[in-house]
Amino acid sequence: MSSDTKTGGRRAIIAAALGNMLEWYDFAVYGFMATILASHFFPANDEVTSLLATFAAFGVGFAARPLGAIIIGRLADRRGRKFALMVTIYLMAFGTVMIGLTPTYSSIGLIAPLLIVLARLIQGFSAGGEWGGSTAFMVEWAADNRRGFVGSFQQVSVAAGLLLGSGCAALLSTILSEDAVTSWGWRIPFLLGGVIGLVGIYMRRNVGETPVFRRNTKADRSEIAPKQNPVGLAARAFGFTIHWTVSYYIFLAYMPTFAIRHLELDRAVALWSNTVGLLVLMVMAPMIGFWSDRIGRKRLLIASCLAIGIVVYPVFNYLLTNPSIAAIISAQVLFGFLIALYSGPGPAAIAEIFETANRATGMSVGYSLAVAVFGGFAPFIATWLIDATGSPLSPAYYVLVAAVVTALVIFRLPESAHRPFR
Image (cartoon, rainbow, N blue to C red):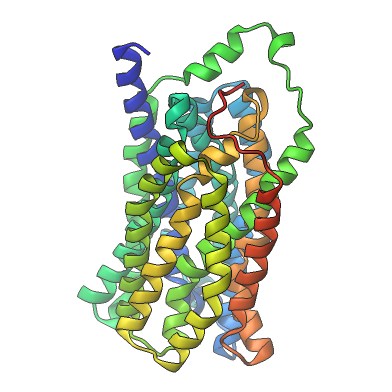
């Protein structure tokens, strides 16, 4: 690889990662403001109903992902990864600003929650294409022996976006009074997301297409036509993602709400502990991704599934019997590391399931369907399980089942760390 190609590759990977970070900041900040949004847009006679409606709207964004995955994924496979990534970042910025500017239920009535749901649909459609497009873009720029390391930065950028959203929400809760955050301060993160989205648009506009995609489009179509069953491979990607997405959204999106409602911790403490967990994930994922290039992906992926399945119940039980700042931070550090075991090798491993001609579409569809069914509605499912069973421990069983299902899928996948892309 020439020095110019290496320089262009680094620039492209950085642009993709930073743009992805801004995308996921926009998408995730909704979850961190859930309890406030519930009172403004989904008022109800009791807190649980209001919160369920808010998390249902959160989940609606994930329900739109499969459609975005199909349409934008096909654009990425036909028109190029860069073109698709420009589409996603424009849509995400628009949806985020829309939430920040929408009047509350008390001002415009039923139109307010409908506008919030529409904004979440736009965000979800964008995110459905973003994940597969950005993952394909990054790993296709990497050398064959560095795909795990380079691909891990896709997850670093996701964690960084969540970290930025969590940190922004925590900072607001620290510097503003509770009344100020509740009345108007909650709008700031959404409006800020629109502003920083302009930075991502600029960066993505000034990078090139991946060498793998350019080579694919120049080759004889008879030589590059997919020889795999795309439906079967998308099903593998679906199963591959279940543990990943459930762990992510239970521990790094829902946990602040759990800490506030069931551990009775301060909002700022809950958000800062979540920020710590995201920081651990962001630091550890590249190290583990680098390691996966040396020893392979499967053993690390399975280790994450088994470890989280084993510890989730005892940790939740300990938090409920010993609710403290130290306990919640320790739990978030632990789960941040165990998710990093999966998120480090995960992007490269899922990309390696597919051939170049259907990689973006296959990854996007399999991943987005799993996230829509199991991840996006994870906060809703956790809230419903607790209300239905009367036990705050019930989300642990949901996490456990997801870990077992994905472990079984990974056992059947071949090791792909050292195979060249086709």
